[in-house]
Structures are given as structure tokens and as C-alpha cells.
Image (tube, rainbow, N blue to C red; front, top):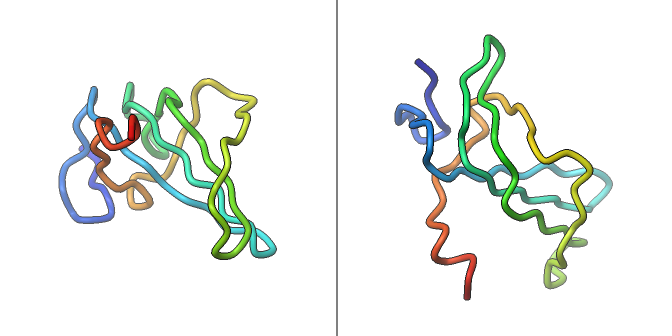
Length: 84
């Protein structure tokens, strides 16, 4: 059993997001949890955005369709909000 950043159990099939920063550039990725691994949770990527500081984020091309992320970095996401 894995737990997200809010302390809730990660539910396979639910949507989660996470962000990483590097040199002022933030990349936020949203995906569907598909699997628990020994080291984290695998997400099937739905969308990825990237932006510099406070600029409006732009779509970011993702090389991998699936990523494994440390569960503690995940936040639950409402996919309906991505459509707006």
C-alpha cells in the first residue's frame, strides 16, 4: 500500500499529478495510476505542462507514456479540470 502527499492511500485507476523543478523551469505531469512498484507508483501520462517561473505553462512533449514516481510526490487530480 502506497500513500500520496496528502496521506491518502493511492488508488489504482485514479488520476494523480506531480511537479519537478529545474533551473526555474517547472514541469507538471498528470496521469492515471496503473501499478504499484517497489519504489513508487506507475502513472500512464495524460498531460504534461512546462513553464518558467510564473509564465503561463505550455504543453510539454513527454518521451515516456508511463513514468514511475515516488508516491509521496503525488497529489490527487480531477481530470475534468484538465478539459477547461
